[in-house]
Amino acid sequence: MNTQVYLVSPNFIRTVTNVSSNLQDKFLESAIREACDVDYQETVGTSLYNALKEKIADNTILNIENIHYKELLDISK
Image 1 (tube, rainbow, N blue to C red):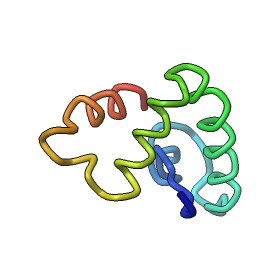
Image 2: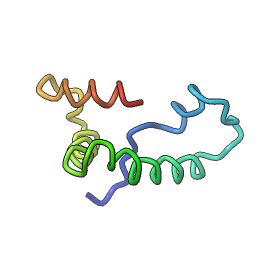
Image 3: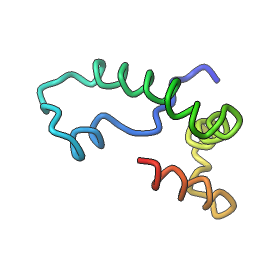
Image 4: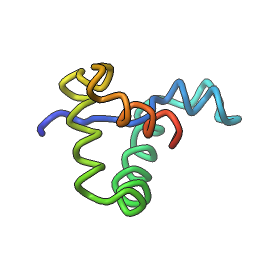
């Protein structure tokens, strides 16, 4: 997978935290990427982590057959 996939967006982080809206996305994306690649992947396992990223990247996360993946993603935010 060549494109960078984020499990949460910088806007979501701003909504649920007190991160300044003046902070550039590139700084938040770096922190999101590190948190996901290390902490989230360690929690859910590499196979599930990669499956989630793949379903987000190919835009199938909203398909009915992937409802459990979408629920996990929503709960884990």
